[in-house]
Structures are given as structure tokens and as C-alpha cells.
Amino acid sequence: TKRDTAFGEPVLFLALSLIIMGVGFLKANISTVVGALYEQNDPRRDGGFTIFYVGINLGSLLATAACSYLGFTYGWAYGFGLAGFGMLLGLLTFLLGAPWLEGRGGPPVPLKGRSIFGVPVEAFFWTAGIVAVFPIWMLMQRHEIVQTILIPIALVTFVSVVGYTVFRLKGAERSRMLVAQVLIFFSVLFWALFEQAGSSLTLFADQSTQMPSWFNAGYTQMFNPGIIVIGGPIMAALWVWLGKRNREPSTPVKFSVALVLVGAGFLLLSWAAANNFNESFRVPLMILFLTYAFHTVGELCLSPVGLSMITKLSVARVVGLMMGVWFLSSSVAHIVAGWIAAATATDTVAGVVTNPQLALQTYGSIFGTIGWTGVGVGVVLLALSPILKKGMAGIH
Image 1 (cartoon, helix red, strand yellow):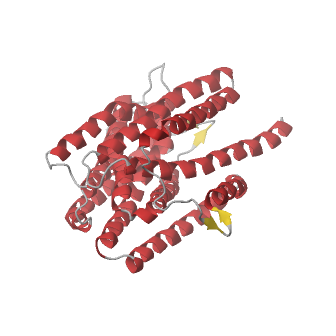
Image 2 (cartoon, rainbow, N blue to C red):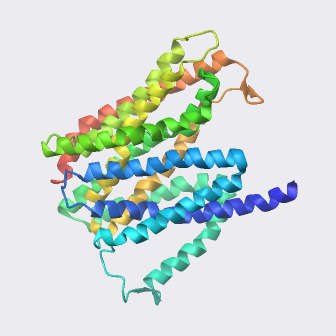
């Protein structure tokens, strides 16, 4: 009923706002903790972050299956409830396992006795976190405001960090921080292309891909976490194996490979769209799976490596801030991804494409353009990688 909707939607957004605030505290800090487990230039660091990333995606895979099943079968209250219990279990696991960290990942400066505006530091951030939920709740219900202000905020933040680096730091600290910021800039394009998975690629699966009777477009979202769970440990072992032999590619090279792979995935789809395999104007599901495989290997070359890179190149006193900038850049990339996805839209009636041939041609054209863009920028970054590696000042 309208009454249920009027009450239910604000409560849903409030719940999401609480999750957003919690994730804001979690993502940057847990990644920093993982980085603190390794000494500087430890060849296991990138592999360790890849294993960490596999754990995240194992949770994604299990949650997608279990929560969706409960939601569709018994109701979404059960699906959301299971997600909540999963979060609680994660918190308990961290609290009980904290002694195994042996103090690593703690604040660089002891918090005891410190205060902000006369309030103890921990109490200040608990209070500020709770208060911040309410403006987030309001913004959640006005997404157009978020899209309007996010990019300017990101630009101001990025310029401020660059300014801090240039004017407050010197020597190796300055050059390492600048390299980190350059790689963050390149990561925006990768995520803008990669995040088509939740928009244009899912619509492509629904509108322009041949599906077996037992499969649907929603299931394609399991390709990515599934490949990560299987391939992540292999990639982690590969980085460690190469590192022990002093043959591990530098971080800029790994980023360039990621951009080339995400571009190659779209070029494969563009090729398939230009070479219609049947009169229904749908490409084989295997082509889409191979695209996800390219993208996922690229993700493993960039995302866990990027988290590792932030912990390696950032000055200790601002590593948490830099991790926040890393995640902020991915938020900007999501907006860009939305613009790209909008360009692939075609006319539908009740969710059914009115002109399948035109839809396939549109996808092929857009995917070809962004595919070549990804490959081209990846090649440029590869050419710049020796300069960036030198700027890392001895950090591998």
C-alpha cells in the first residue's frame, strides 16, 4: 500500500545510511590493517592483499546466493536479516582474532589522553559517526544532489592532497605520494569501464546474449566473484613466486595490464556484436563469460594491488586519508560508468527491446570505443611505468 511504501522507503534508506557509515569506517581502515601486517618491501604484500580480496569476494559470492535465495523464496526481510547476521559475525571474528594481529594496524600516534574540542578522540568519532548518519540519510533520498556535488568534492579533495604532498613533503616521501596519486587517477578509468558489470553488461546479458533455459541475466553477476575465488589464490601465488625471483612487475605495470585487459574484454564483445552469430541478434553466453574473465583478471591486477600500493607509498600519518581518496576515486568512476551505460540505452516496451539489431549495434559501437580507450590508456601508462617506478624510490 501507499502507507507501507511511505513508511518503508525512509526506513530502508536509514538502514542503508547506517551501512554506508559503517562501511566508511571499515573499508579504509581494514585495508590499512592488512598493509600493516607486512614490512616495507615484503614480496608477500601484493599476494597478501590478493588473498584478502579473495575473502571479500567469497563473501560476495555466498551472500549473493544465500541472501537472494531467502529474499526470493521467503521475503526480503529474511534476506536483509541474513546480511545483518553476516556483518555481526564478521565483527565478532575481528574482535576475537584481534590478538593475533600483535598490535599491528593500530594508530601511529597513541590516542590515550588526546582530545578534539575537549572531547576524547574515540568519543568524538563515535558521536560524529552517529550524527553523520542523518545527512547521509537525507542525501540517499536525493541522489541527484549526490551526483552534482560528488565530483567537485572529489576534485577539491584530490587537489588538497596534491597540495599537501608538494608543499609539506620532501624527497622520497613526496615522490612516492605523487606516484600514488597518479595511479589513483588512472584507476578512475579502469573502474568506470569495469563497473559496467552492474549496468550495461547486465542489460547486454538480458537483451543481446543467448541464455540457456535455466540461466538468466542476474546470474551473470556471479561470474566475477566466482572467478576471483578460483583465480585469486593463483594470482597471489604468482606474485610471491615472481617476487622471490626479482621478476615481479612493478605496480604501474600491473595497472597498465589491468587497463589493457578491461579494454580487451569490451573489444571482444564489440567483435561479437559486429559478427552476428544468429538471426536473433544475440551473442553466445561464452563470449560474455570470457569478457568477465578478462575484466576479473584485470581487477586482480589493479584492485588488491592498488590497496597494497596505498599502504606502501603513503606517508604513515595520512595512509588512512589516502585510502579514503582511493575509494573516493572509485565513487567518481561509478558516476562516469553511469554516463557510459546511459549511452548504450535503446528503446524498450515492458522491458523488451523493440529493435534487437539496433540494440546489438549500439552495444557494439559503444563497447568498441571504450575498449580501445582502455587499451590505449593502458599502453600510455605502460610507457610511463619506468618513470613512475623511479618515483617510488625503492618501493617495489
